[in-house]
Amino acid sequence: MQTATHTDHRSPFGGKGEKVIIFSAPSGSGKTTLVKHCLENFPELAFSISCTTRNPRGTEKDGVDYHFITPEKFRQKIWEEAFVEFEEVYEDKYYGTLKSEVERIWSEGKTVIFDVDVKGGISLKKYFGEKALSIFIMPPSIEELERRLISRATDDAETIQTRVEKAAHEMTFQNQFDKIVVNNNLDEAKSEISKLVQEFLNA
Image 1 (cartoon, rainbow, N blue to C red):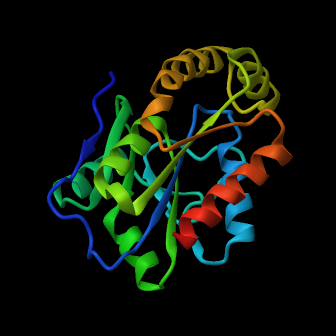
Image 2 (spheres, rainbow, N blue to C red; image 1 turned 90 degrees about the horizontal axis):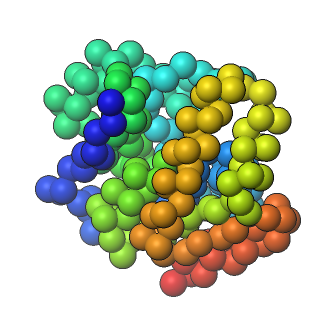
């Protein structure tokens, strides 16, 4: 079951010139590596930890990579209107951005950096508008994306096939982002991302 992304449109935050940077990409495009690069090189950025009901993968840690919670607790937070946006990707497989995360980071005087899926990225851009820079990370090709997912060895063949099909669909939304960066050569992608982030922070 796939449902639309839900966004709370009613109350954009404060209006004090706070900024957010949104990274979205099909799974396996190298998005997380590029987000980590930004965090290491721009001390004025802070990572917004998303909520999810999926199980941790690999070395992922609760409260560091994601807030891992049960579907029941997630639905409770929906009822409490605790999310800027959330999505039920598959049945009981939720992802969401907590308002409290954004408020925490802005209260520290930092710019929020998001690592979210494509639908979440589009919703966040609509929500934050001019306060947001949204960046879509493109894999060089679907074939290369599939090769990367296989080499990760974190999913079975059926899951990889599902991810590849989803990625092909997600790539059709690239033009809804402010910038598109093709991650063909990682060093070149890092350089391009650094330039975009620097320009946005200085604007």
